[in-house]
Length: 161
Image (tube, rainbow, N blue to C red; front, top):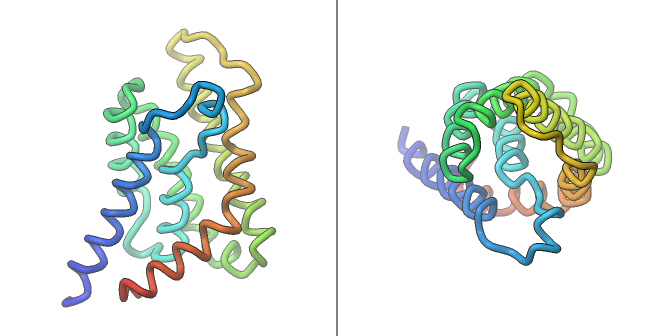
């Protein structure tokens, strides 16, 4: 039980950093390429510690994401809950893949998140986004082979098992 405060603090810090990276101002030309930081970090934690992080974590993080980004309340909560469930259920299979295949699996999870968000946008009568809406999933695909080993190293150096 002594490792729980350290684990909770480290995970909380990574989630706060992901939320911050989601809302930090960047140039307008780069905004279309902003990775889905919250989803990527959630996928990482659900695959590394599926017993501790799952649907409830995805829901709570989704509500925080909605509040921070000013989105419709529940939009990200729904999509992140589904992604957390899928990542938790498939973690053994995905973690066994080489990094490039993991990136493809993560890309599919990022697509699921975007599809569910698109469904919510359509259900609420908001305009359909352009094809640029899908660019962050490709950025996540390219980012995963570097993000996952970096998070592994940081997790090990923080003493989080």
